[in-house]
Length: 265
Length: 272
Image 1: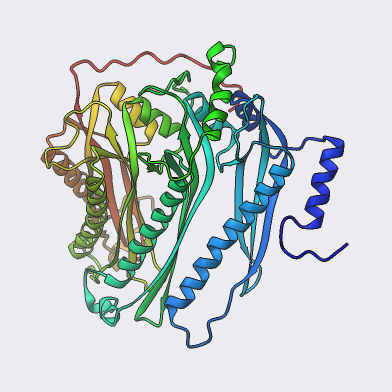
Image 2: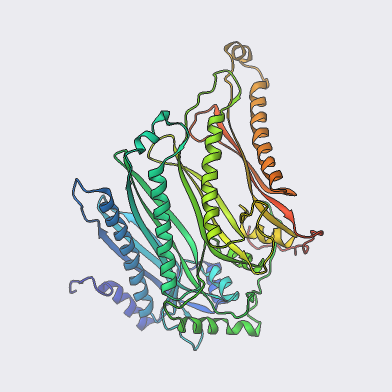
């Protein structure tokens, strides 16, 4: 097998897509309720799809300033998500799908410098004559997609926002001293406020760039760490799904029946 | 299922057309929301539009205070810290919602996370979804701020259906030091089934303080009542005898005189 240059899909993934094309065997990662939900929305599963990438974190040197390190780490996180989702999309497109439901992205540290990004989802095809033109992707499971579509909203794409910041503040050591009393600590507060703000802004930008109407956030993570007692670094991630409205009028034409289960809990 | 409905047949068709007509960078009134799909749809149905995910955060150094070994007492400095830090996070979240022109914030989560920077350092964070009513109305509370509510989207829908409006999240906190038993008492109680009165009293006192403070906040908002109250005891990191008692709920006011909602249909789910 020729060596893969990192462009397009790896040879084994391409081989699997080709095998599907000849056999037509359908696979799915949807749960039973998820599959029913997808069916309600008018989709049938085509096949499970995956996008995967292993990346190495660059090295900024032992004396590197935390801001550079954070920039490098967040850049890698952003790129990892993008590459994994792009490869997942390539597989789905090759299967002739219209969209991918229930995407799960996991980030695993393989060792100190390597990280693996895996995106798994189920490619679906709409039972319509109209094609969406571009693949839609969502983290939402089939049930949620079914409910959204019934109410006049369609998922557009999975959106990710990543941001990293570091702040140096000489006063921090006095503010975290046991005798400092009740006080807000400025440097970390500034870092967490800024990283979350920037990650949310990037998330919103990703939604706006695809022309959607809004976004449903499904995950927000934040990692912070101290740098030698006088500085703080943080990385925030926001993931979710961009959605677009296709119903007209002010109220959604939802026909869902509201029930109040009278069971325990 | 509604798939038998002829209108429903067009749903995938219309949805796919919308995707095909999508143009990047179109001017839209973009929103973001932290709600789940169920919550999102119900909040829409209750007559509210989500405007944006809002959050406020404060990393706070909690001071130091020692309780007397054998005395039940509130550690007022710690109580103050918990109040102040939560207030900072909440007011920053409210400020973000204010900028968006929101009527209120729903599904607020108020969390505390101790940080790796130091043992006395915690992040206080408030996250919610700012919403605006489709029909203009008196949604803001008597302080002119957007209402806040820690109810889920589902509970929010039910509350509005029943003719109530949330006014604001109200809370009361009390960090309490519970006295240790005196040596004589401890020796005297060995092997016996007895009540330890000062423990009982301490837990009573602390909870009463937290609840009455929450009620005072609700009175200030001129609320009719408080719903969804949680009374938590949070040990945090202060050791066995110092605990935070924290009461939180949503103060509500009536929107109309009758508060009937349709009787729920009985269903027997085929799952447990």
